[in-house]
Length: 172
Image (cartoon, rainbow, N blue to C red; front, top):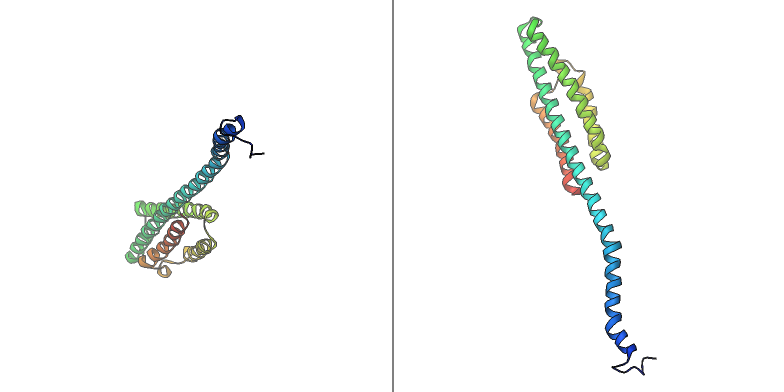
């Protein structure tokens, strides 16, 4: 069939000059209209997921910081009350009650942020979040003399943030 084609025949010109560009147009069109949008959609979806993880980590970090500061304020005013030997009255008592309310609110905010974080993190990080919650539950009902010192509080909160930060870096 192709043996009889001469350089000036219409069939030869079509096969030689028109078919390669048509194939390039079809393949390019397939790439541009099907494959590229899929790749772009996957990239956008993954990027949005990574940004969401970052937002969650920031929220957990912010809530954890507020929670630990609330704990420390409550411990300081409680130690002051214990050292003075008299129960607080008036403004100092109101301040202590405010510290208790702040601590409880910050604890709930942190708990909510950790619940959301568990959706986006690995099993290892989720296990650590649950471990942190058990630790927090354990200290939330202790008396002042049974509470961990500031360094121990900082260490436990720091570990949790470190696990989540490592998780974010590993996945991005």
